[in-house]
Structure formats: structure tokens, C-alpha cells
Length: 157
Image (cartoon, rainbow, N blue to C red; front, side, top):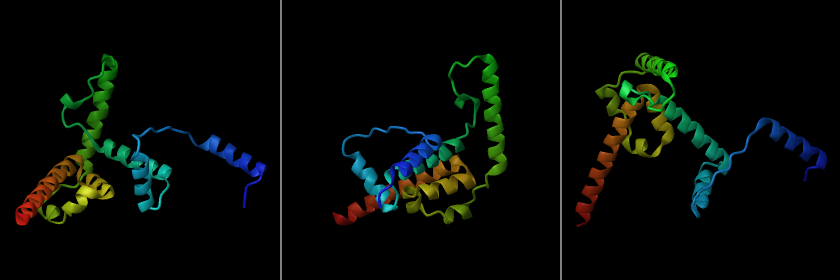
């Protein structure tokens, strides 16, 4: 059933008032890969890209500098620099209060293969233990995966 001109006009007005457009360019051939991935999760390309952006912003917001040497080095003026430092100090304090301490028992329950492939699993770990713990766990997962690949290659020889 097609829409009438009045209905289409109402939809266009709603979209114009409630959404903004962003044009994304990708290398030739990559669009089909994005579409295939989105289809695996029963999403449109648009909703997949929106979800990817939301998850990335959430992950990036967890990246809290641990020292002043990691503060932004852009020239923003002296009065603004103290404001930026204060904001990062507040985030660092929040991180210390918010995240659960990571123990050996916690590490035993980590699914390292899932950690390398599942972004939601990564975000959950970052939300619980902090981005530094997540980074070290991903590094361990990569090392374990490399060891498994080496062992499999040796078996084949």
C-alpha cells in the first residue's frame, strides 16, 4: 500500500524536525561488508552505524587519563586549561569510586574468545572494571589466541 502525498509530507516533516543526516563514505566494496554484518543482526545499515557510533562513544568516554601527561595538549588558554584538568580529575575520582576491583577470581570467569569478538562483552567489562582492565584483558586474549594458532600450526606440520 503506497502513501498518499499528505502522508508522505507528514513523514518528511517529522523526519526533518527530529533527525539530522550525516553522510558516510567508505572504500569501494566495504558497503556490502557493512550490509552483510548489519543483516546478520537483523538491522538496517543506518541502525547498525548508529549503534556502532553509540557503543564507540560509550567506550571512548570510559577512557580516563591516569596522569596529567595524558591530558589534551591543545592550546586552549591558561584559564581553560585549569577547567580541563578539573574535569579530568573529577572523572578520575569517579573512576576510582565506580569500578569494581578486578581479582584473579574475576579473571577465571573471563571468556577470552568472546572478549576478542563481542563488543557488548567488552563494554560490559569496561563498565564493571574500567578501561585499563579491559585493555590488559584484550592483550591477554590476543596472546592466548596467538599461542593457540602457533600450537595448531605445529600440529599440522
